Amino acid sequence: MNKKNILRIAAAVSAALFLGGFYFYFKDDIAQEKADSELLPFRPIMVSQGTLDEITDDLMETTAADAAVNVSYTTANNTSVTASDTIPDEVRQSLVESAQSLNSAYLDAIGWLYIPNTNISYPVTQGRDNEYYLSHAYDGSSFKAGTIFLDCRCENRFMNPVNILYGHSMKNGTMFAGVLNFAESSYFDSHRYGWLATPETVYRIDFFSCAKTDCNDELYDGNTPISEWIPHICEKSVVLKETDYADNDRFISLSTCSYEYQNARTVLTGRLVEMTGGR
Image 1 (cartoon, helix red, strand yellow):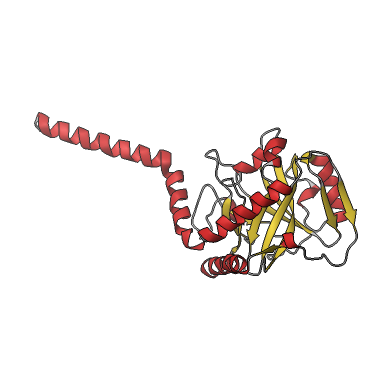
Image 2 (image 1 turned 30 degrees about the horizontal axis):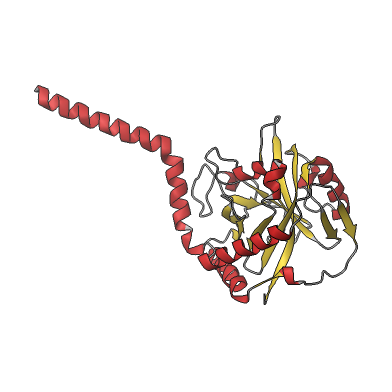
């Protein structure tokens, strides 16, 4: 074999090794970009997301940046609908239809979670256990970043008193990595609201607590009576904001791994406010 052929073979092998190493190093990012691109048809259409951002900005302007702890409880059989509990009919309908289309395409997909001014804008799934979607994408393919998913013990329309979502804290800032930021009071103050669209309705999420706990805490029992659960989450909270709640309110907790101690978890919690059309 002459020298030129040896050089060509060496160059080809080097290129293959380089490309193979490149793919191995970035394969998770590539897989995530692919998964994200395939979700584009189901993402809230831009006009809806833009309107949600505007509504959130308006809410933030009227929300006092007061760190005082004042969680009060009032008994109520019915929650009255106020102006702040409405969004434009067309926006609500488009969000519901997007969630319905997502559920039709991927049966385990039960909603879409969006927190303005963060990286959190993902489908929410629910599996038969709390393991599968730790390592699978919404379409069932193997995926290191996993998928945001609802605790399998919760009712799939978010009807539990407390509805627990899980997601990895990825080093590249995706999935629930952003939840860790809420442990800073100033960050919490500037990100007080989120949105959840389901095939049936749309919820605004009014965040009031960021707690630090372990993976076996009773906070993860979604059937705990609210009158017992609220004092416990207040005790565990590192950031706690003023909020009012009634005995028929429902809540949602976003849980991810953190690293203060073994099996530590950061849990971001808010009250679910069902939105009506007509604004």
